[in-house]
Amino acid sequence: MGAIIQGAGTSELRWDAQRLVICLPRQVFGALWDTLVARLTEAWRSRGFFVWTQPAMTARGSGPDAPRWKVHPLDVLSGLLFLLKVPANHELVRLWTVIDWAAINALCAHLYHNAHGGPHAWAPAQIIALLTLMFLYGVPHETTLLCRVQENIVWCWFCGFGLFGPWPDHSTLYTFRKRLGVELFEQVLTLAVYACIQAGLVANELVHFDLTAVVASGHRWSPYERAVILSKALIRYLELVWADQTPQEPFPEALRILVAEVALETLPHKALDNVDPERVVQSVADWDAQTDPEQTAWQAMVEEAVQEELPAEDAPPLQSTAAEQTKPWLSRVAKCILEQLPHTRGDQDARVGRTTSYTWFCGYLMGFVVDGLHHVITAVAWAVGNVRQALLFRPAMEQHLQRVPGKPKGVAIDSAFDHPDVYSCLDQEGIEGHITSRDHAKPRDGGFGTDRLTWHPTKWEVYCPHGTPLQPQGNGRSGRQAFVGTGCEQCKLYARCHPSGEGEPKKFTLDPAHHRRWQQNREHCQTDEYKAAQKARFVEEGRFGLAKMNHGAGKAPYRSDEMNHIAALMIASVMNWRILARCHSLSLNLGT
Image (cartoon, rainbow, N blue to C red; front, side):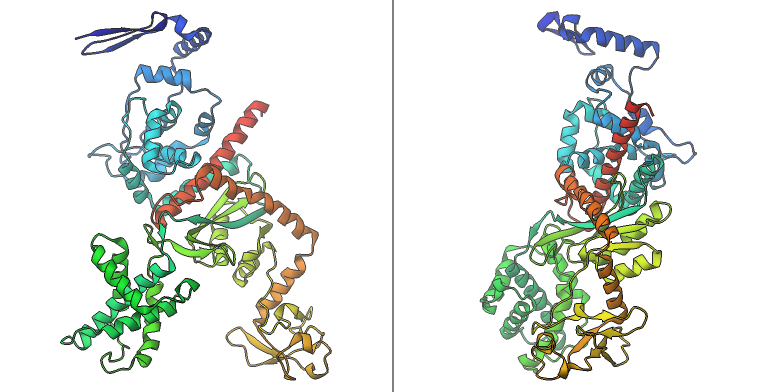
């Protein structure tokens, strides 16, 4: 059976059971006809139809155990449309030329064992190309990505797919991410950084580090819901302890009420101030009736958290011990279990944290180390949302030092990193820190705090706000030491320094080494060098704005810590490749 369809300009489509024939006269192409003929003639004479991406992305390695990749020959129609619709100056064409696809395949080759048998695998370069598109254009989901690839001619060309497939499915992407893990995606970022270094885009003079919040892909538990979950965990815990102590007796309702009281006290929040324990206990019963523990992820995590705390060797006899005596022990158990319970429904790894003293979020913290020359991202820090930000500086700098030869002369960071561990890291590496100083906490009575103390330039002597030496007390083995005023009774600043003192000497408690280093940084904040470094840092903060606006960094695409860490590494790699492609294109235009 065959048929013919006539189109405009005497164009024609013929098909039968074996083939499809398309006839397009020159009138269809209009002014493009001469250009098309010239390009086709040139391609025919050079024996290269056009730049086809698949051969470079699926070339097999040279060793005998090199994996075998899937290779699908290109049909003529796809090739013609690529020739017409993939302009040489397209962003993806420039990006494709600067990525070392062979190096990506070689990086992942040891994970595949199909050299002598088994099915051919999708080339890692093609899967990385898909993920590059996802994070380059901020596609929210992998299923959406795969649909758009099949609809977009340039995207098909970029990944080495013909217009008629085949294409991998979303399970292939999931398996690929699990197979590579964070470590190999770190090496993909290393490839991108090395390419930028070789292109002269990294100066390693002044680097910047900062963090931003990444909201989890899940529903954040409300304070009341967290109280119900904690109560459920504690009830389950006490039921197991009770069954071990007195298996013949039923579990008493009074202990359920006690558990709810402890849960509400362990989770201090204004929304829970007027909540009755009986209401929480009823909610636990309602949730148990509505959910299947075997099909609910958070219920499985509750059971795991409870089992972690067993056996309860220090548990008091529940049947004979009064509630007032049981409560302190149960409060300690509640705090231990609370650390392991999920903060969201959907992403069990995400945690509630804050970016400021009043702004809370549930998710993760993502940090970039950015070189000051062309804003290349040299390292990525990743952690759950409730981690202290300053603790991420050292691992981030270690990554930077591993990837970039030499050490930067300076690091510009904000007041969140005015922390002893940051000072220690910088001093050990011999790097100058331009750190915005953070004020110390004020005393409750409103008097002078430790930020008003000063140190002798050469001696370990500390002076009060009036300039009088303070007397050390104790040996300070824990690092912190008490210092007491020596002339407080005659000091004219006493009323302002120690409003609640009632004539007693003012007492300060601090770590001498940390406080002295903090004071040195505070003095450095007045220098022109510091001000210039911070001015440059404000420019680098735009990296996070671009990452969120263009690359989807504001919302976690996956529902686990490891997978979202991989997403952060891919975002950094894509942003670096984009810088590399732009600079490479500029150098070609300038003829350098």
